[in-house]
Image (cartoon, protein in one colour):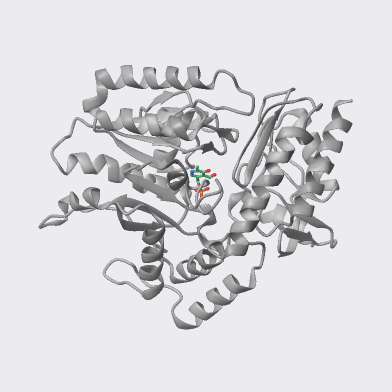
Length: 434
Ligand SMILES: Cc1ncc(COP(=O)(O)O)c(C=O)c1O
């Protein structure tokens, strides 16, 4: 039997309707920005393999770091035990974050990082006797992962209608998404801020926290908001003493052009969730980082105030070693130059290249760009599927989100590769719509 036949006999894939979806690509290896299938065809990975890959596939320094760590210590229980890679990584991360952040809580993926953040925020108030503070605020279209807390704060993403009755109640506000040439951005932002203010006037003293994907909403359609909105949001929410959680699972590690969106916007949430790119795309790992003032409320003479959360692979040494190697690469001047080059190519594309196409709302931020096709808005709409197939025939790995086409390449992509990819995308869109 082929790998594909064996896959079909045994595996249930994520976010896949097996009855109608095409067979998966069988990938044998990766190198740099490319993935190779079993027939030797190569694909330029323009989505960084679900937004995790930073420095390219099979990156040798990260691979070496994992190998060396595996020869020393592959795993140890993290309750009552610790190890050097976890400590070094926590120190490195805290050095790169604003000074208010003092503690790193490890978990495995973006959903669990969010789960931990929600629990931290909720229990922060309970530990201080404020048991009425149990409301959460989130944003329409926001996506925070597939576990129950994460689904609750991301329920308007449209993915979770089958579980709706099981989710806790969360109040959603519009995300003031903007794009090049948007003339209403200021009014839209003010409208959202007024709605939140009205809500907090009534329920501020019952609200535990607000959660937001800062600067860019990912799975909800690569929607982008302005830094100034986040600064005004912070000022408003702080005035009601409500905690702020930044879900930077996707925006972290250089994606917005800065280390994290929090730095880029000069705002200070209480809790930050980091995942996806943390290991450069090699191993599952995540962190929920919080300010010291929050951590201190969890201290007590017995277990009651402690955070009851942990996973078997919490702070896995191999993941921490991969993350340390990835952080080292991320801080090299060449990587920073690469990030700037990617942003420049995106800027050129959304400002001119894409003119005359049936698209709207062109936008970019750091290493991410997106635009909407003017037709069809359903997830997996006819045109997106047609386009996705055309792109892969041409050797481009692009997965439209409904009618949104986006680029989120690994940082090792060359300027020429990215420019050529835009040219192919433009040709294929013209081909499908004329
Ligand atoms: C902003 C954000 N938060 C959380 C998650 C969930 O991360 P994971 O898929 O690693 O559980 C995602 C995944 O796309 C995300 O984009």
